[in-house]
Length: 374
Image 1 (cartoon, rainbow, N blue to C red):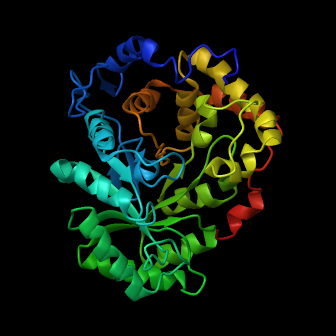
Image 2 (image 1 turned 180 degrees about the vertical axis):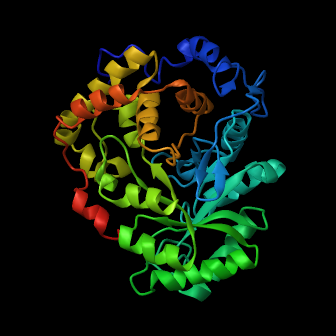
């Protein structure tokens, strides 16, 4: 059931796509709404100077594609490969060159999908993947970042991704039994061998970022960040800026909530991953409807969708922020790329922030948690 009062949400986005497409002609990208059976967007024309953002020394599209939910069954039943390959390749046609996956997604199934989908255009794209969990049983086990284990993990990644190098190799979660300097040193050697090109961290504290960066320059730090989940504003994002590291937020649309996917009447079955998310309890959703209403108001002001406003707000916080919203639908990817036409003035950002900070949040991380490795 959808709450009323939203003039343009994801479900009626397609009916508005002609309007969006017209706006894109003057923006970074232009596209039509027709998709061929191969997933290519017919009539797509990239701008001559498409906008890019930097993750350390790594240049990427300003919005990436998170591929976790395509085959892993994380938030929805696993999708068929024949349906997901056109989405990934269609994203390339739309100007996306940054694709995020991990060996634990599935495990292994998402890397295999991404590898097959991007093999024909491998040299045109940036592939990020992550290690850090013991998957020797074929299921997710405890954390393991011992040097020999990292090397084994990367060999498996290279085969599944059908490539000779991982463009951005992340430590998925810190192993408390292995100093992060040892992890960074192992990745440094993999970079020397050409099996990895850049080093990334995920869900770590500013102290850990600094320790790792001193051993091997860190290109990107990945963590959850949205206008509802703002804990990383406590030192982490600024530390990245200070050190010349990019910040890659997952969950920028708050797992769909800020895209108007849920409302105060939404409930989740016990076996749903959403049911275990603290900010998706009935109490939390009810409280956060005020945030969604604010997002809808800005969507009307900007003639945009709520999801676009959620992404644009995150991107406007720092020039080195590159969100990786996940989707299994190509029209959502088109919608996400339409975000590049939305700009906020400093006055608007201050107004938005002022209204946002007046809304109490429920079930979110406290700012103190940003100073602790997760």
